[in-house]
Structure formats: C-alpha cells, structure tokens
Amino acid sequence: MDDRTREYLSGRFGDYYRGTSLSPPPDAHLREWGHIPWTPGSGTTMVRHRSLYDLGDLDTFFADTAPRHAYFSAARYDDPGASTMSKKGWRSADLVFDLDADHLPSVDPTDASYAEMLAACKDALGRLLSFLEEDFGFEDLTVVFSGGRGYHVHVRDDAVRALDSTARREIVDYVRAVDLDADGLIRTVADRGTTKRVLETAGGWGARVHEALVEYAHDLRSMDETAARDRLMELDGIGEGRAETILGAFERNPEAVREGNVEAGGPGVRRLVGALVSRVTATETAPIDEPVTTDTRRLIRLPGTLHGGTGLVVTPIDREELDAFDPLRDAVPDRFVGRDIGIECERSATVELNGTSVSVRPGTNTVPESVGVFLMARGAARKTPER
Image (cartoon, rainbow, N blue to C red; front, top):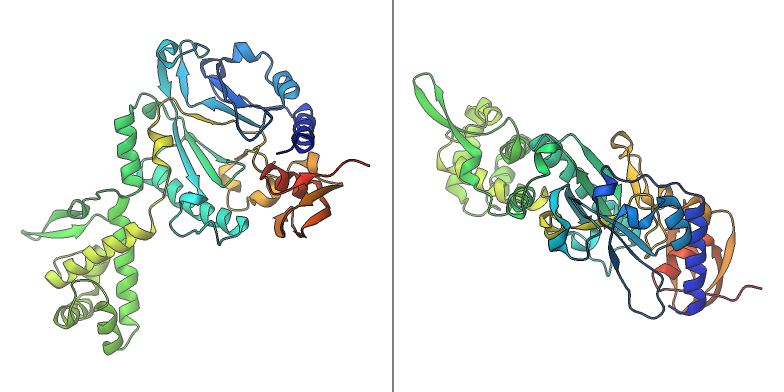
C-alpha cells in the first residue's frame, strides 16, 4: 500500500471514529486490548498487552489513533496490561466462535464472489446457533459480523467461563461432528415387556438424523417401487435385497419411522440410519475455526470498529434481526456514503455494496467512497491525487 492510500484510509478511519461512540465489552477493565496501526510498508505491527487503563477514554483513543484493526481479549485477567501472558493472572474467558467463509467446504474463494461467500457463511452461522442454543442451551450470546469474511459468536454464560482448552475442544468436536459416535445416538427403551432401539429424537445429533430419516422415508413413499429401490441402492452397504426389506418395513409400519425405531426392518434400516448419519454430519455441521474457540486467551475484533481489510464495520447483530441482516448494506459506514472519490486500479473488478453493483476497469475510476475504501483496503486500488 502506497503512502497516499495509507494516509487517506487512516484519515477517513479517524473521521469515522470521531463520529462514533464505541460500546466496550462486559468487564472491559479486566481484558487485554490490542490494535494494528497503519504502519508503512507491506508488514503489520500488533500493539498488544494494553489494559483499558492504558488506553484511557475509549472514544478518545480511537479518534486519536484510528487503528487499522482493533481487538480485545476473550479472557479476563487480574492484570491485563502485564507484558507477558504468564504475568497477567488468567481469571476466565468467554467462549468465542469464528466462522470464516474461506474455511467453508462449500465455498471456493477463487471462484465465489464476496457476496456469495458471506451468504454461505450466514447459512453456517444459522447451524452454529442451532447447536449453541438448542443443544447446549446457551443464553448469553452476542452475534457479530466480523467486517471481513464471516461472523463471530461470543458466549458469556457463567457455565463456560472457567472451561479449559480441552473442554472447549470437546464443544468444537461436537459442533463439527468430529468422531461422532453413531451408536450413541441410539437408546434402548422398554416396550410392552420387551426392548427396542430407537434414535434419540428429543434433540442433538440424534434428532437431526431422525429428521433426515423421516424426510427420506417420505420421499421414498412418493416414488414408484423401482425408483425408490434404486435410490436406496445409491447408499453404501445397501443392495437390492436390503432395499426391498427397507421399503417393505416402511410400508408395513410407517409409525416406526416416526418413532425413530431402528429395529423395524432389521439390519437394512439400521444400515440406512448409518448412511444418514454420514450424510447429516457432512451437511449440518458448523465449520468453525477450532483454534479461536479452544484458545482461552484469544484476541477478537471489537464490535463497532472498522475492519482494515474492507472498511466495513464489525457489526453486532440483534438476534431477532439476524435473518434480515445484510452485511453489504448494514455494515457500510455512513461516514463513507454520499460522495465519490477517485481511485486507480490495475485490473477489472465488480463490487456489490450498499445496494449497488459497481464495476471498475484498469486505470482511473470514480466510484462511491465506500467502494473505493473497500478496494483500497483490500489492496486492489490506490488513491488518486486530490484535485
């Protein structure tokens, strides 16, 4: 990034902060603070091991410093400004989750547009929140658009604060279905003097697999017998004989499917359930970034600040407004709306921001400032001299 571009972005970030009042996280005085300034050259410098006392008034600090990126720690410390981690005196930490579009198996960053990447990441966020709220019963959740390629979720329930890295990794493994025990999704229940094995339908991965089983059985019943048999035989371990056994069991006893009874239909149905476990865990996991969640001393972006790689706001989102949230509209700073600027580009690009699609060509372009800041922050444009 050349000097003119860096100075322009630094100045406009400062203008943003001078018109913004930031909301600190709970227990802000117990957290470590860090930021990355607008240093010359291609490298970056992390300034960390700062306490809120070191920063002083938060709004004044940001107005004066206008950092490129800003962070606070998930952890609470006795002495957050101590120069080494061993001297800080760890007390507790929020449970933090990071979803990044670059890590989604369904997204190819070299092919997908920025808008498509964010849409896929929002879908994954919905799955993650289902695990956190329904499976774990967490209540104190803060959802944040990272300002870059994804979302953060901060869990601050009292029950999670003291968890060590090993316990946090177990939560990660559950959400990502790592080494999921398929047999553990099935329980044995008493039924008229005997026992039967049924999927756990009350919640968790068992309920997800049971929902897939009910839907799969419904689809099979809507087909003719040949098509239904062929579809079953697409699954590993199910040949023609087992396919016919499964179809017969579904026809004779549809109630068994609704109950999650894996005994009805014999080993064929049990094999079908096993195949559905693999399918469900492949499509319904939330591909979170494990190191972020397991690190009890992690620095995470401060909501309300600007992301130095996009110029978008790190935006907290009310839970009831999540469905309607559009990061390409709602995270665009008002400070960067309402005027055009000149930029120089080396290659063509199309940017979708604030409800419009703007295409640039190699050479000099006049674009809305939010688009110019986005491209310059990503290293795809330079600021032209002011006239």
